[in-house]
Figure: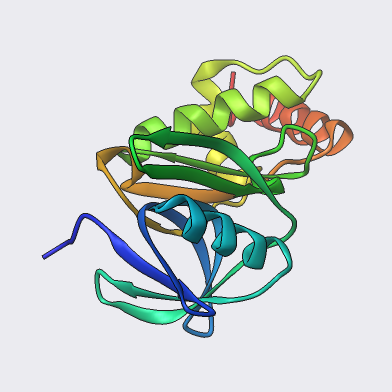
Length: 181
């Protein structure tokens, strides 16, 4: 049974997590995105600890492990709802100026479409939507990520975005070999 929240603890501070995307590394998790919910003081303290590279303990949903961020962390969004704060922390995997990208969605076809749009937005090479499956299988090397949250977080992958020269040569070769048209 999946719970609605994970528990995040560090240095005596506790918050709850309603969404998480992370890489798994020897049982530990390296977060790419974390949505924290809790009191303003606990969220502020936990965020400060995370920004300095501290690991947190995360539990729930069959998890009981350490959580660190996979790279530099920044706040994507922070909202106060009554006496509760929801703060979303992300890594550079969600940045547009990077050769890696995290994409997520409710199912694999939507994730593949989002991956195509992400690749298309970062390249000067003209791409056709019908190449989406070929690009997924041969060019972006998707790495399955751990994901927790609502139905929008059922599938998550880390992509490798190829440089324009590599992408262009592979696309031209695939057109020549009639793998794509």
